[in-house]
Image (cartoon, rainbow, N blue to C red; front, top):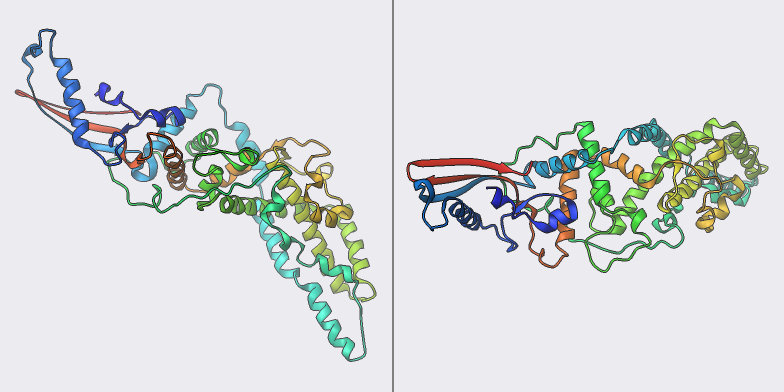
Length: 427
């Protein structure tokens, strides 16, 4: 049995440190009879002496293989367990810093994001509505003219496109993948692998996410690289978003990251008296001679919302450029002055380099936050999509299917007056 399992799939081990017996032997179709044939040969070699005669009177009469536990069984349970063990065995590897930074970064972010979204919905259109009312009143002989520059602050955040988030020198990958046949989508061969291992336990999940971050690529690494082969380039983004192109996955992840930062920055502005006063003063100027306190209030909020968007756009570009952000924002970390906000939107690269270097959260740490929000089962299966896709681009692996890769199996052996059964696996 040890000889049988020494025939592990070499590409899977070389690339991902995973042990698995390929039951299709590279042919794309599972061949259990060939496993039995190999087992028969190994058994015969071990019970045959130098003279060619059976040792101890043992005569092999039959073998059978059953109970195949596959890498894809129970939503990738065997893969999950192996990945966790790989990371645990790495001496000195600690998750403590990741947990602390993520807690600081994510603390209250959901509430901040909701507030940003709600206020966007509340105040967007305020200037347009006022202008429409003013046009009607002008027809009746009255006019309360608004500064024409006010309208550009109404819904400023809606001008975002993915290209604005990519720092200078970066290029968005246009790679696509057909998802109909990936492990998480297709009908799989089912074995006897148990579900234990992919349960949503925080520590186990953290180890597994550490494995993903170690072995999978992401946009911050790949924006300045060009590959001639391979599956998708933004692999962690695929595991989070599950879409069929690098562009779509990056767009989804950056949208979530931008929204999270917008919420944090918006609440920071609301609680910072000096910056808030700047927005209020500009709102008074933009409101002109209208004498409408409600409009002044709406403009102030639109300015704060737009300002939070601009600061967040700068931060996302810096993260993709390899910079870090402070885990807890303070006044010294604020980068975009109100006077520079509108010019920034026409020249997003103006703040790509941090004037004051921050330390704390990098792009990968942000991805870890999003990965933690997914179930362990989904993480496992989408990661298997990536692994099968990447290996399928290699010579000799075109027909590699991970549901034909065995983590464990049971062998039955019959000899004269003797029956043996043994289960062996990699974990």
